[in-house]
Length: 77
Image 1 (cartoon, rainbow, N blue to C red):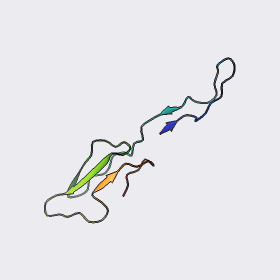
Image 2 (cartoon, rainbow, N blue to C red):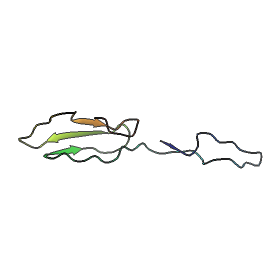
Image 3 (spheres, rainbow, N blue to C red):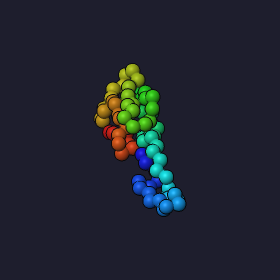
Image 4 (tube, rainbow, N blue to C red):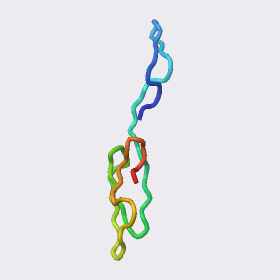
């Protein structure tokens, strides 16, 4: 993710307008642990995966047991 301005103009003295561009990692944030199950992931950054598993005697229903941090900064469903 980019912070600051995408372009800047500078005058002959070297003074520039706007904020200096800065790239920061795209972070999807922490997920909530499912009831009667667990999730495993090593990172919350872009393209990271989270895998859900259910405790014994429970089964997974709805959605997908694997979620990926996508380019919009959200976990896919």
